[in-house]
Every structure is written in C-alpha cells, then in structure tokens.
Length: 357
Image (cartoon, rainbow, N blue to C red; front, side, top):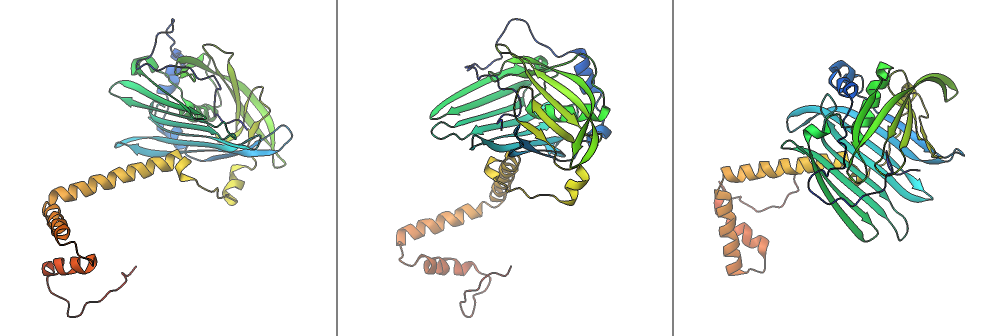
C-alpha cells in the first residue's frame, strides 16, 4: 500500500520564512478560479457523506483501508466544511498511513489543514507532519520530517494573493466530488498546489469519461477524473479516480502503481452493514483537533471562573501556607479540621459516602 494520499515528490530542504522565487510565477487558470467561485450551497449539501474503500494489490491481496468524511462545521465561529481522510495499511508488512484534516470555506479556500504521513520500517521509520493555516493575509506552512533519528523542520509563507486557486491534499478530495456530481470537467482546469519542498506547482484536472465497473456482482456506471500533479524537478504524478452517479468514490489509483483503492459495496449496502474501525485517537487528526479545542475551551472557562472569584486563590494560598507550617502527618484530617468552620453547619457525625452517579 502507498502511504501518501497524493504526490511522491522528494522532500526539499526549504527552511526560509517567505515563499521563494522560482522564476515564472505559477497561477491557477481563470477556468479553475471560476469553478471555485461557482460552487453553490446545495452542491455542498450533496457532498456531506462518508466514503470507504479497501486497498488491494494486483493479486487481489487486501493491504489496507481508505476513508473520507465531509461535514459542515464551525472554525472560530466561521461556517465551513470539515474534511477528514485517512489511509491505513502496510508496505511489505510494515505499518503505514496518511491522515488529512482540512477546514475549507464554501468555495474550497483552505482555512487550516493538517497532514500526517508515516511508514514504520524496522530501524528506519519515516514521519511527515505538515500544517498550513491562514493568518493575517498569509498562508503559513510548517513541516516536520523525521527519518530515523534525523529531524528536519521547514517553514514558509505565501501571501494569499499568490495562492488563489490552491488545491491541497484535503480540498482536492472535495473538489473531485463536486466535479463528479456535475459529471463534467471544464477545459483548462489548472490549479496550483505545493510539492514536498513546499514550492508552488501546477495540478490539472481532466475528464476520463464514463465506463462500466463491477461492484459485488452488480455492474454500475462510473465517471472518471484524472489529476496530474506536476513537479519542479521530477516527472508528473497522475491519479485516476472514478465516481458513482451520487458522488461516492468508486476507485482510486496512481498510474504506474500496482496498488488500487476500490469500493467493495454500494453505498446502500454500506449503510446496512457498517463496519466499526478501531480508533487510535492520537493518530486521528480530527479527534485530536476536537480534543485540543475542548481542552482550550475548558481552560478558558476555568480561568474565567477564577477571575470572578478571587477569594478561591486566597483561600487555597492560606491553606497551603498553614499546611506547610504545621506539616501534619495526617493531611486529610488536617484539611477537614481547617475547612470545617467554612461549612454552613457542622455534621453531627462524620461519614464517608461514595458520590451517586
């Protein structure tokens, strides 16, 4: 199974803080910009569903799983789309995977995206993490690559005017759903993207047309889209995806690769027999993001309460000072006697009782 969701361009050594000049300024085509601005809310509503595929070798061996979910969300009180994609499997029996979590505007502009890719080889592991976020009119990108014990950190920023028509690992998946639902790829659909060295490159989309595909003994018609990811240094990488009429992803393959991602059951069958997948929340960017958001929310709430009740800090400070002066052997008994006068009334008989649920 292939670990990355998209291109395999070798990592560069970029460590600057601003987007470097690579000669000709690359831009998205007018047709690509027009397509993004033409997206209607009703179309996005049709894209809110999960996809689940299996990854198989040429010989039909099951190598892993690939899933995508899309939902409406809020980011800093701004309505947006939340896309989460995850690929898990093995390369020569070595665990590997890729996770992408992206917050996108309704015209697919990236607000925030986290990308994590790993390959756990014996004695030689690879781990890539890349985070991009809009901040004060800039697209800020930070990347950390760990190969064995060696860690490389890269940072770059581009003005938002330079990344109009940007398609990333996350937004690419939603973009193709929208194209598939329209069942037509406009001509000259050239967007911009980033290679592994965080340099701006072109990525183009074209139509593969209709073909027949067999799913669990049933023949269905699927619509094909080809994406070509160009490169500054290497040959282009080509991906071919086929979609069902309702926008569900039916198959996905990198041209030249012996590995294919394909749907096993039609969406109606998937709803009848949904398979629970074990969750490793530390590696799930969506769950981790929600955990961190909730953590910050609780911290802010607790800090607000303490500001409204300054007597809490004074009370705790006095108790700790008295405790350290006396240094009692039985701390719980000492605390009980210290705080007992603060009670509205004293209990007639001390008791220990487990709290009710």
